[in-house]
Amino acid sequence: QVQLVESGGGLVQPGGSLRLSCAASGTISSISDWGWYWYRQDPGKQRELVATITTITSGGTTNTNYADSVKDRFTISRDNAKNTAYLQMNSLKPEDTAVYYCKLLKKWMLGYEEYWGQGTQVTVSS
Image 1 (cartoon, one colour):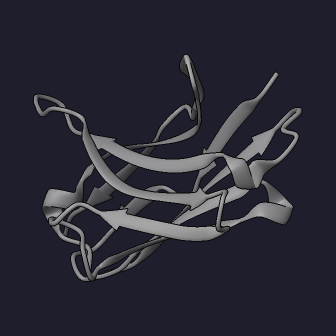
Image 2: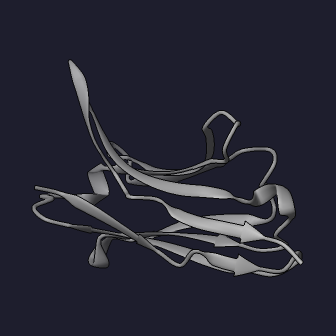
Image 3: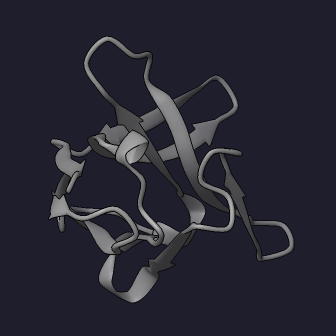
């Protein structure tokens, strides 16, 4: 089975940077056919989709999307050879504090298959 392991969280000061990693293990025939998603959730707040990176298989085009709250500060990337996704977070703000979760998903005609990471805490504070 597929398992996602997250790492890279921690405590940073406002304006600092952090890079999260999400590594997939198990059998994945073609990682490029799957999309990566980063979410975050703080206690009392609704889960927020932060960033996505997907591939249009018909054309092999990679597409990224970001929440307005993190646009121009966060960058999502992937290394298919390592079955890993990354979230580079720059210019961090206290409001970025949350548990960050990665998700690996493949859409099927009649449904979907997805796997979630365990979450990693990011705390931005002085």
